Structure formats: structure tokens, C-alpha cells
Length: 247
Image (cartoon, one colour):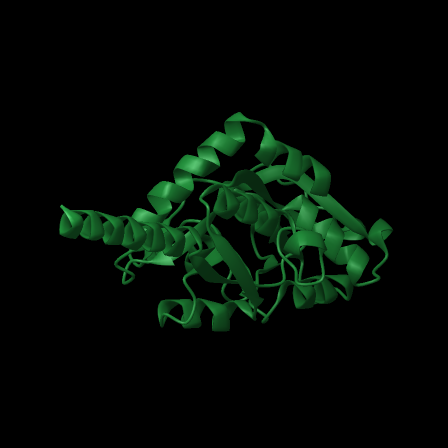
């Protein structure tokens, strides 16, 4: 009986240790500069980071984030240096390589131009001969097809700041991104907002996600737990509260 009692006690101790280790599990994620969604300089790392932090906390885990240029963070995550990267939208190439969380929120990709060259955009044929700027590593969505068809020209600098600087001096005709990021970028660069025009017709409606390489054997299971908590936080209005605070 005494031996059985000792073994039972040891089993309880080992179970407690295992549960504590699981609960204390920490994840190292990576992101980049993409205000107001992610930024090392923003409170709580920006709205996307704050949403993900809330989900991870709800899972009983902890996380830390590194901020790197997008291409480097992307490659390092694929190589296993980081557990996940965010925020990313879907395209067919990425879906072959990455597991995606449920949508964190929805956005519209729209065009920005100089006011003196405002575009009447009703269909893609209105883009004929124009040069559109979208940084390297960013999702091109339907722009890739329009470029391959010869309808538009593309400029792909290393970051979104370069796109708006190029637009400011007339080196490109259009920049495509979401409205929140665009006006934040214009303000942070110290550019004259009165010079720019927002074209409200959406080129693409998108979602942002947390993504994990399919080469990570635990990634799919992690995202199942992540999505459960994300869904709960949305139902409770907590995700919308974070969006309202930042936007």
C-alpha cells in the first residue's frame, strides 16, 4: 500500500510539472513595420500584435515578438528561427507552404494617387499604362495578372515608405494598400496629406492572418487552439475593442 501511495504521489507531481510546463510555454513570433497593424514603436506593438497577444494569453501561453524586414522575417520563419509570422494575407503560392489562422480582421486594398492625377477607377481597364507601386514581399493580389497582361507597370521597392516617397515626386502613378496604413504612412513621413487622393473603390478585399510553416509538425494543432480563442474573443467583442482603439 505504501509503495502504491508513493507511486501515486509521484504521478501527481509529474502531471503537475507537465501541466505547468505546458501552461508556461512561450512562442517567439516575428513581424515587421506596417503601421498601425504592427510596429516596434507602437503601444503593444500595434493592433495586430495586441490581438495576437490577447489570443495567446487566452490560451494560457506567453509570446515575444521580433521586428525584422519582411523578407528576412519570412525566410527565418521558414527556416524555423521563429514559430510564426504575421500579418499575412492569402495567395495560392503561400497556401502551399503555410498554415493560416482564422481571419484576424478584414481590410480593403485601395489605390492612392496625387490629387492632380486623380483616377476615375471603375474597372481594371482604367489602369491602362499606369505604374503601380507595391513593395517586395507584399501580396500583389490581382496586380500580378494585370502586369503579366501588360495592362500596368509595377514598381517593387523594399518597403512601403519608398512607394509613398515615389508617389510624392511623381515617379509612380498609384500605391496600393489599405486606407489606415496609407494615411498613417503619409503622416509619419511628414508628407503633405492634401497632395494625396484616396480612391474608395476596393481593388481587393482581404483578411490578415497569423501563419506557420507547414514544415512545423505542431503548427496545425497550435492554430486549432489559437482559432478557438480568437473566435471566443470576437464573440465577446474584445477584438473589435482593440480595432476601435487603434483605428
